[in-house]
Amino acid sequence: MLAQLNTFALLGIDAVPVQVEVDTSPAQQPRTVIVGLPEMAVRESIHRIERALVNLGYRLPTGRTVVNLAPADLRKDAGAFDLPIALGLITSLGQIVADRIETFAIVGELALDGTVRPIVGALSVAMEARARGISKLIVPSANAREASVVREVEVYGVGSLAEAVGIVTGLAPIDPVSPPTDDIEANLNKYAIDFADVKGQEFAKRALTVAASGGHNVLMLGSPGSGKTMLARRLPTILPPLTPNESLETTRVYSAVGKLQPGEALLCTRPFRSPHHTISDAGMVGGGGVPQPGEISLAHHGVLFLDELPEFNRRSLEALRQPLEEGRVTISRAAHSTTFPADFVLCAAMNPCPCGFLGDPKKPCKCAPIAVEKYMGRVSGPLLDRIDLHIEVPPVPFEDLSKPGDGTGSAAMREQVFAARAIQAQRFGSKAGGLNGRMTSKQIRTYCVLDADGQTTLKEAMEALGLSARAHDRILRVARTIADLAASERITQDHVAEAIGFRALDRKLWER
Image (cartoon, rainbow, N blue to C red; front, top):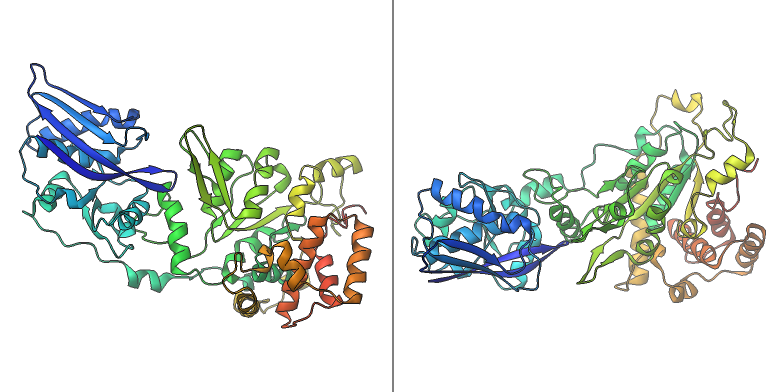
């Protein structure tokens, strides 16, 4: 007897439809084989499934059983096929009558006692089920909340194989899981930290306001303990609120790599990722035999913070160049290629020298000039060209630390960001990018026209600092954002001068 079920395989962050076909026929020796390009985790699943069936009182096939996972040219590598294969086995043996089983999509990993363990990628599975017109989905109970945010699909959470049998046979009806709308809305865009916690550093706060307003990348240069990490961690608090669609896109990445917290349905705040400087290039941008998303995709619609930037592997940093330009990364392999989203704001921090105290008014620098040059040279010019703002973060004086009042807080900064973003939304409409930091060359020529004084200032800076054509465009983008913050339709000389002032590394401020 032949049984057919719908399930999905995870390829990167995308769910791919797979049909499970189970056919049992008489034979002298009982044997069960799985075909359809299964990897080791899938080939081993038959042992888990058989023990689970025995422990729940079902009989095992006594003849030859073939389990086919179609399409045959797609690699299957996960434990999520356990539950549909088990249901297919007992259906093909006639131990249950499941006339409605083809209307469901089923995923789940089995334990030896028949309980269902959580899987990764349940949100992607639910989204693909919706796209395929499958209206019912059975997932492990631990994954039910994240899958239920796809409203067009009825999601049933099961804790055991017995519960799944009850659903597909209709003998033990269970209500679908309700979408967790109220919990999500209550926690959406709620942050426990605030820029008011940072004393002083008003110049750095101004630069981060510009960065958040136009979607610009920023590099902070300062001695240890000056507050670079505190500032970076608070950058998501002034970004525009995370929309439901943005939350869904980012949560999908976290679901695919198993980084969602237990019971968490959707990410409620913009992600902040801070990888260690020992990270590999595959860990940064994604990779592996079966491509998996990296840190830049986990920072999608949020902030990627790279502390101690020169300490990162050169290959890891250079791999950022294409994603910073395109907002996505494509991982190519011989059999296929996978594209991951990577639209993030890069916030990096570094010391001005190996010891960290070059320019510090209290502690003398002990580094030789050649050591400073070598240290700064670890970050390539092409990468620095893609970072719009290079700012100094000096040590905070005692007077600022001892002031009883708070400094500029996230609320005030957020108001400026929202106003500037509203101007950009009116300017670009539905055009690709939608932010000053994403403007194309054609848009720069249209929206970043300078008067004579502004042209003179920019020309002098280009000649004095030896700026590249890319740096020229970056300055214009930042100047446009500064003008938007000032609610100015024109870019004035002051706006250009402030944008140039945010290019500390081009001015080589470490040469003192």
